[in-house]
Length: 118
Image (cartoon, rainbow, N blue to C red):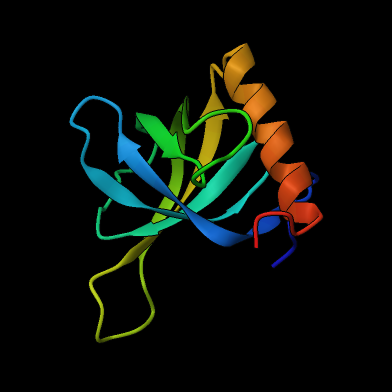
C-alpha cells in the first residue's frame, strides 16, 4: 500500500495524555504526531468521520504551559492487533486549530525532533 502522507510524522518519545474536552475522561496517548494529525492509542473506540474536542496534557514544566485544546476528526480506528488487549489505535486529522494550538504543535514537533522531551 502506498503512503498518502506528505507531512513528516514524529514519534513521541514521551506519550502525551489526551482527554475528552467535555467529559474530562482519559481517551489515550499520542503515539506519533504531525502538523496535520496524530495517532492515538487507548481503550476508546472512535467512530470514523466524527469530530472530537481534545485536551492534550504536556510534560510537567513545559515552557509553553501544561496543556492545549485541539479538535480532530477520526479518519480510522482499529482494534490493536494484540489479542490480549482491548486497546484501539486511531488516526486523527486536526481541524479548526486555533493559533495557540498551532504554536504548541510546532514547539512540540521541534522538541520531539531534537529529543528535548526525553
